[in-house]
Amino acid sequence: MSPLGQITSQNIFSGATVRDADDQISPGDAAGRLADRLSALDLFQRLAAVRNEVAGSIVFTTSFGLEDQAVAHAILVQDLAIDIVTLDTGRLFPETHQVWAETERRYGRRIRAVVPEHAHVEAFVARHGIDGFRTSVEVRHACCGVRKVAPLGRALNGAAAWITGVRAEQSAERADMRFAALDPLHRLIKVNPLLDWTRSRLVDFVQAHHIPYNALHDRGFPSIGCAPCTRAVAPGEPERAGRWWWEQEEKKECGLHSRLASPATAPASAPSSHP
Ligand code: SF4
Image (cartoon, rainbow, N blue to C red; front, side, top):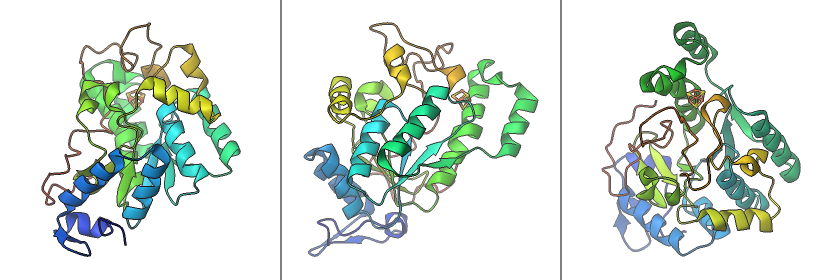
């Protein structure tokens, strides 16, 4: 038995408590304890601990950026039973597909692709045009909704935990996230095992372990999303400045890491709707 009692998708949001050998704790407290425990561990230990503490399916979503490649490495070399999933939006760079294939070759494991619903893409393109996301923030969010957020909901369906490559340093929006927190939108615990890593630590890790990485990183792309919505950044620019660069909003997110993912103290009876 883990120190927390095992966390399951049922007991996170059912209102049931998570039973420990000595006491009972709420799902929010269980997430908080998991967050506290992860902070003292290295990346390999963090992922092994999450697998040990959480019962049921765990999904790691990768976009094959540097962060995700580090997390994938730590999962794959330990052969952890964590489902590795990518959201193939239909607008990715060829370099992203190349590192996807290279990663499968290196580790000998398939990465599951989740694609958008074709009817939704067809309807979006018919209404807004193939690059209609440039016309307004609202239309851009609609495109991300069809190509990313809705597929993410399907990728996470039934999972008890979701692992991401988010780092606090990437943006102000991400700076106050936690290692583990209840995500009421997807009804699971969201885990950010790289949260406290700096960019230089990440680069050192990838180099030390000879991890395959997206060739665009060497061409000035610190953050890589869909091809028409990502550009290289100039030295000194914020890491995510190249995402949706034509928009003036400071908050550069696509909805995958919505603030609806609550802190560990959020009530367990939060809304259950999927995107
Ligand atoms: S990043 Fe751009 S192309 Fe990709 S889903 Fe969002 S708006 Fe659409």
